[in-house]
Length: 316
Image 1 (cartoon, rainbow, N blue to C red):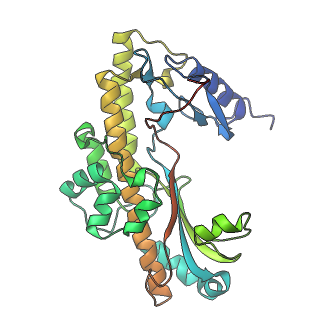
Image 2: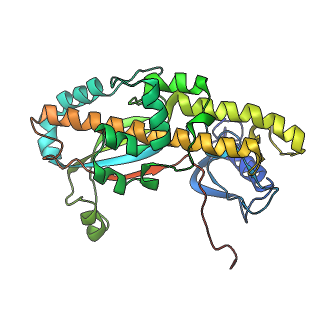
Image 3: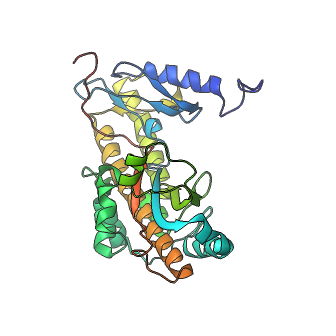
């Protein structure tokens, strides 16, 4: 590690401290886990995973465990194009993608959406995109949770969060988000790759990395404010102010989970809209259709999310 790792905000030592602080949260099951890319985050380290026992009345939920960009995730879309097909029109294609997908801080979507559209999208997730014609039915099959968290409740999303989210549907945002045209470099498992429609080295795919934009950020901010008060009332203590939390079965805990699920649905709608726009951009440049270009979703995986799951832990 570099000599600055101890003081650098994203360094390894602050992350270790965060992992240890999470291990001390009420109701944690077994261990606080760090994935190989771990680095300092907000409350939880980035790459920090923890489970909490929903049967334990003391167990908590912490927005820091999900993060501010709720359901930030990665989607991969395949094509039947090769690097040789794309290289001659590389600049034109990149410009076409730029023209179709709004990017940057405060960028606004080009697909017209009303507040009632947003309310439905928050509840329905990818099912809304499907109904409105922005997604293919097959997209759902390859999306985590089939692109919809059923416990979502748009009423648990503040009007401020909705106002922030409304103009941003179908936008990439800034920071580490990207829509990238990529080339398959190596195939490790030919059978698995073939099932995914990845047949050859040099095949062109598109990766979209984005989340719930200003809406998710506001849902997290709102929840942290309420949970600070709940901690005082329920006498919950943590080792770090950023680990603000509430008991899972408290009103604050349940409201956060319902609002977080709605923000997760927003993120799936956002990625599906950008997939629609990427398909249009490719179709325009190659004078074809997205269908003929075989632009199917290979996967859509979330990395900022909280879910109810059942696991065997220590034989129980």
